[in-house]
Image (cartoon, rainbow over all chains, first blue to last red; front, side):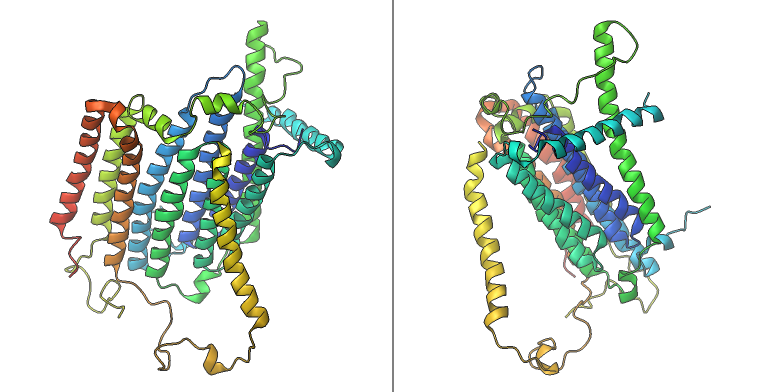
Length: 110
Length: 240
Length: 118
């Protein structure tokens, strides 16, 4: 049944979310929205982990293990830290430059 | 190695899958509740993710991102990742989005800054890059299967007709639900068994990561009274 | 297992339905004759001054940020608390080390004065 929600469908969903994230990172100039797009991509990656973990468990040769879940959990923890520090950096940049346009952040450009 | 040629079978596979889907038709569908909810939440997630990227104001972007996170949590629940579904709501929709909204309120953005986007061509490049990444994922997946088959048959050539994805035809709630339930797959108990035994080291390292995060935030965003020139009022008590 | 989510689904449907229904009904049934005065922001009856999007002091941000990091700590404690008896003394030591490291962070924040309001 091609329409049933199988591995292919879940991976496609993750792929579409990832594409939208890449699109946002490249298209938007507002640093906060760029950051949100990065969160979207992280979520898509987590979805791939969880999907493989689940379908591995239901595959006849697979074993019921949860490595994918642990990985997704750890990546959520890392994402929380990353958001906290990253947003602090955005706030400091706004304080110094009065803008959060990513095209204006070119101090380190050689 | 994944070379450019491996894109071609992947594209062929995608075309074949699409043709299959069209041929099968609605009459032969064996649609379960799990499938229905998957498509419902997938559509919600994709739509709100699209709105996140295209919305003009960061506030509506952030609120659509909350919707995306809730839909993702529902999809985790469909994949019987019960603990992760709860954590998704608590961490992402609860904590991270609060911080995003805080920062959006914290920064006082001018109107013209909100609507500024890049040239549409760059967006198109983003789309193409994203699609290329997905095709690469499909290609590597197929390729790894081919390798497996080749190893089994003792040749280093690619097997002529490698099988399709495993379990691609079944839906998540149709296969082997009992086995998953017997193993308490995805429950908090199971997670804690793994977390405090096998994954003890990552668990302790996570505490160091949180420590670094705490220190980093305080160092970065604490106000420095001495070095600020007079007349700058960014973090003075402006709100009444 | 997935059937356990039916109450959550019901709650979600009811809450979304109620909110949408209220908005829709008030839009359909309520008479609307808007004037400039009526649509302006309500600010205790005084003429609105300045933008609605007032800037927050950064102190709120530091508090919110520390909330996130300690929130993650609590999330690590949920599975620990559930399996507390099975994990035994070793689990207690593990969690003590975890919390100990974070208490170092708390002490740092405290000493730096980031928790003081003024």
